[in-house]
Image (tube, rainbow, N blue to C red; front, top):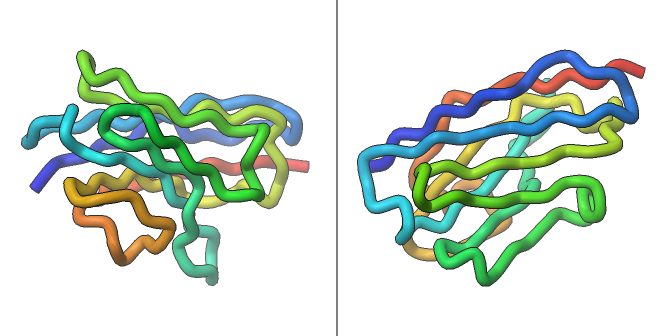
Length: 123
């Protein structure tokens, strides 16, 4: 099992930017596929972005493509989510996820989760 801790969420105005970070420990980070999901009140957890352990494959949900950028630093055991041009509909708790087997847009496929960080975008 890997331990994940997210940070960086806060209140921001529409059109603004935020950078979320996720620190991992407990397993060989460079062998883990990593992802970001989000969950708004009353809604199911949804896929945001994912990055393969080698950074060779990166995927985004269409709703964030062109605005969000996922990256990883294997030396620091961290991943990041740069979020630009934020919209009120981006408001949610953002979760970091890790899995050793593969990438998936289905949250139930992921093995490990952080506790989440709240992002609120005001209009």
